[in-house]
Amino acid sequence: MYDSSSYICRAATLADLPAIVEIYNCAIEAGNSTCDVEPVSVEAWKTWFIKHSGSRRPIWVAEDPRDPKTGVIGYLSLSYFMNERPGYFRTADLGLYIHPLHQSQGVGSFLLRSIMESAALLDIEVIATTVFAHNHKSLRLFENSGFTRWGFMPGVARVRGEDFDLVMVGKKLY
Image 1 (cartoon, one colour):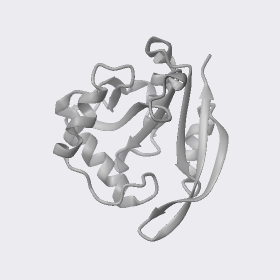
Image 2: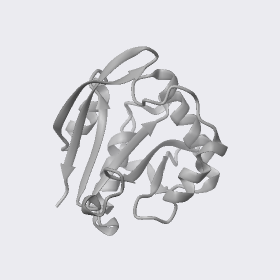
Image 3: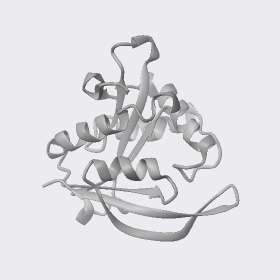
Image 4: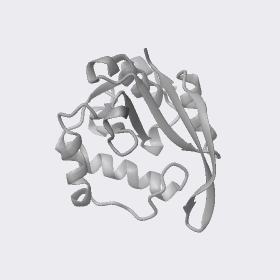
């Protein structure tokens, strides 16, 4: 197991987008952490990336400085919660994806700690996300990071013809 204190977290650059897309496409293929069902392309995600760059809802990447040639090993993205209505601006919707070769090595915990420590600078008081109910590793990650279960949504997702339940988790930071 890696010592998660030795990872680096930084703002994503456009040069990181191919690695971010690769990680996300691995999640699509695995079928247990996103409702997208077809791979995405770097070109298709450029607008999404640019919208986040320099905003109060950034994209951050994690790297392992002990193996710099590996590059980006995980990322998190923040989005405005519930259709960007101003009353929800204190809350950020979180996306967190780790490359399969680096899962269960503390990268997710490291990225969650990094955003929670920096949330006040982004005017974020609450972080929320949804997790497939069968994705026990992700649920454990969030619970170990102090998130609590806020809701259960039975059968709201359909991926490759199979229905899935979602669990909403969140954390009020201050």
